[in-house]
Amino acid sequence: MRWRAAMRGASIATACVAYAAASYLAATSPRPTLAGAAFAYVPLLLAGAWMSWKSPRRALALSSVLLLALILWLGRDALLQHYRWGYLAQSAGPMVLLALVFGSSLRRGQTALITRLALVAHESRITPRTSRYTRGVTWAWTLFFTLMALTSTTLFLTAPPATWALFANALTAPLTLAMFIAEYGVRVLALPAHERTGPLQAVAAFMRYRKHATEHAVHGTEAGDAPVASHQAGTMAPGSISAR
Image 1 (cartoon, rainbow, N blue to C red):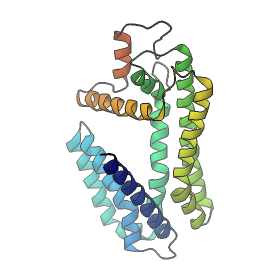
Image 2 (cartoon, helix red, strand yellow):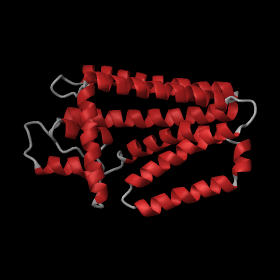
Image 3 (cartoon, rainbow, N blue to C red):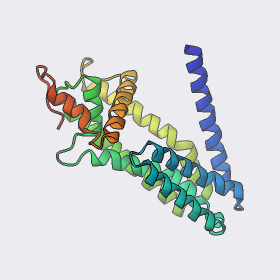
Image 4 (cartoon, helix red, strand yellow):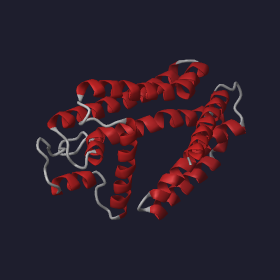
């Protein structure tokens, strides 16, 4: 089973590298090509279709994606001349969405996203120190994603295509990984071992939180309330707090 997981991981990594390389070549091509335009917009449509399929309003969401695909097809001549905008959407779009997801959880009365994951990982019991730290980390990721989106957009508008494409396709993943590593280093220094979450625990917590979010989306309730409600309903451990 381990070798299968390793092979699966290697295949995914290879596919990601190949996709990044192909995107770089298409984005820096001196002449617009139909293949380059398709490579720019088809992944966006596939991502939209996947998100629509997961949506509780599946029919409406899928209809919107199909309508967008029709509009893109009807305007294909113009898109062919400006297909690099599709690559900008691939680069900056996810960063904007992530900044909004993380940032919206920092509103008054909301539970910070990383705090929610900590509640899931620690069975709804965290200390005030952990709550403050995880809220700070949520702020850090919000700022990181915002800066990444702004940098990508600025380079796209002002720098040569090759410079922007290098940032978007070759540097985004390493910078994100560096952010993960830096945050974990700070976590080790800021929190004692029994209060912090390791990388594997964090992944498991995210998967459980995602399951909660999907279930609550289906039932039309707030996804973020799942771990919080569990916390509030459970017995308070000594020194534990509400996540809000």
